[in-house]
Length: 255
Image (tube, rainbow, N blue to C red):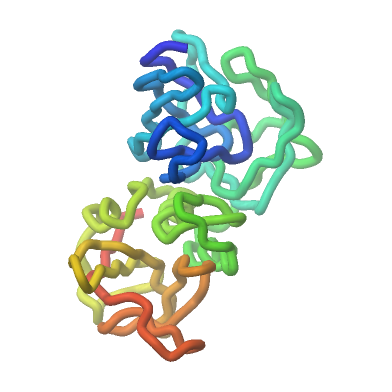
């Protein structure tokens, strides 16, 4: 291991932590095949920068596949992301389940990356519709997980980021970063697929994001990925008859 080295996530999903400690909070997750660069090394821990969103955090070095200095491995276009719930891939560490939202390293049945051998089991990734609403709804009832990015646990900005990745747009990781991308849209000019942002009543900071649906609805991760009502005041939870989030703004992204 050395600083400046390049690696890819070698497991289905691994935690990226705020500090080099197993008890530190998870700030995001790496999905199989996502690319990183080593910034700092402390014993088993590596501080990394994630290639697709420049997010920084700490991972366990035993969970990644390091590439050689002259590796020709490149990230695939952001539209080439797996949209099935899961596929089986034979990897250098055995057969693994590759989750929705992971980059497609290759659609070929057998392929090699920097000397590492891979083989899709039974089926290969296929091209799917880029309908953002269909993709968003495929995550319904995924449990909320701070730092999560998969159907088995996801947070609000991880949800918007991962869905947008699958239709070809690279969003940043946090809601406070995503609100700085794209173009501002007036509430009355919203359309399905726009992102709505919500702010803390106390600080005014952006703390939440969701994907706008037709008929004044929004899909977002709050306890679970769920659909609620959106109006100019915020998100109204009809099940419990209260506003869960205070409206801030809407952004649109060129896809």
